[in-house]
Image (cartoon, rainbow, N blue to C red):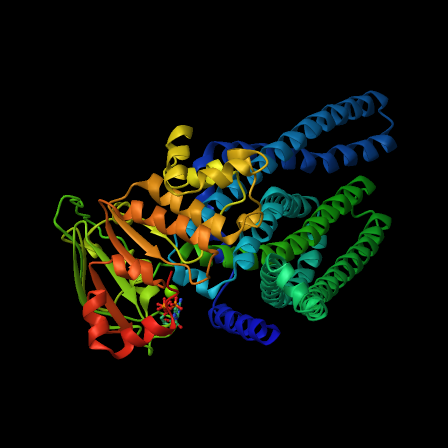
Length: 600
Ligand SMILES: Nc1ncnc2c1ncn2[C@@H]1O[C@H](COP(=O)(O)OP(=O)(O)OP(=O)(O)O)[C@@H](O)[C@H]1O
Ligand SMILES: [Mg+2]
């Protein structure tokens, strides 16, 4: 299992690696569409930002006047400036609080939208999508990647805007104060920008890597947690711990590299900025001594250059954050932009349930997208009239369950035609197509909810008494009543609090409730005790009445009931007929009948 994990992870990260090239902060901009509905909020926040930055920029002037006024000795003027400073301070306080409120709320809003959009996208993806990513990894994108975006949107972006304004304003006023000193400051800029850009690229790559490492470990953790008892039964706990620890350590190592680059960048910037300030101060101080500028002007200049330096330092930090978020944004936009293997028709046609041809397969060829060389269904043809029952039999891996998947359009078939109620399944919407079927899968999907809600899943608008009726028909009512809270009993994640046979009966009750014209039944291979077996057989027989049925049969009782039996092997139909006809023919069918069917 460890090896399997590693190779799968490798496959995924290779995949990510090849898409790595040519990415930039532009993937963040792809998320901008999520801001579009909140233009008003955004504009208002930007407005406040400009005001508060403007106020900050007037402070040095006030201070200069105070300093120079100090020398001139005009007390009245000094009082005036100090009062004005207090007024500005309150404006600044209110403005900053407002900005924080607006921007943070906007961040939360947008990230909520992104999360919902991600889930909405993923929930309707065909199974092919989930074959490439572990569920835990998808969850990690929905949670941790969006959280990273949140931190950027709610703090970094507003800080960035604020600092850009301070930088521009600060530079402007610096020039106004002293052109000579300002030019000296500008010499410093290229010394700083070049390493920042170089390190930024590295940061983004490392961030993406670290996010996908986190996702890897979430994927593995969720898979192993779901199988905790199997892991314990096989004494695999040690290996499981090692696998997870190693993955977490890998995550840490990448984070370590990222932090190292960030620290280096910070040290470099602070050093350059402060040395620069000291040198300029030095030159400035000499100018004051020489009487070239007043001390107030020097103070004003220093404060502006501190603004500029602070802004540059903050921006470089934010730049690092943005690179990190860009990594996360890439992973999110990647999912949002994934096309599905299967597409709905643009001009869908409507299904007619009264058509007498329930299902038709004509020369159908099918393979799974992950294994294009392995033909799973090879030139398959069969017909099923309304109300008939068809049984599919054949050895494991023959392609029986694949027929169901192709029929419900979870995967695309490559050749031939599949029709349901006389309509090509490619011409109708997924919703309309799937409305025709009630599927009882080989392994039922039970949700962490009550029995009642699990059955109601078959038809969400069904009343409680309809649910109970379906449950009675599925021979589930009696055992449900014996559960501690009857229909309100919580069944645990994946129905762990129920037995296999109970889960199957809930799944059958669902199919009753759904009341669709075509029943797709993938008989469980696990054998049940005689009593539940009989109960389930009876329930299925009742369900098959007045419906069109395809049943993947593993039991003789089921096969005997079918009007038509297809015997499949390696994706081909090797013979067809009724039970008696096939027995007479001998071959695979009679062998299966002797060996595999559990006859009761
Ligand atoms: N998602 C998938 N991707 C790639 N190959 C798959 C996938 N699912 C099944 N296969 C392969 O397709 C072939 C047919 O599988 P299928 O599930 O249809 O068999 P089956 O007849 O239902 O067997 P069983 O009786 O054991 O349920 C097998 O060789 C299997 O390995
Ligand atoms: Mg199967």
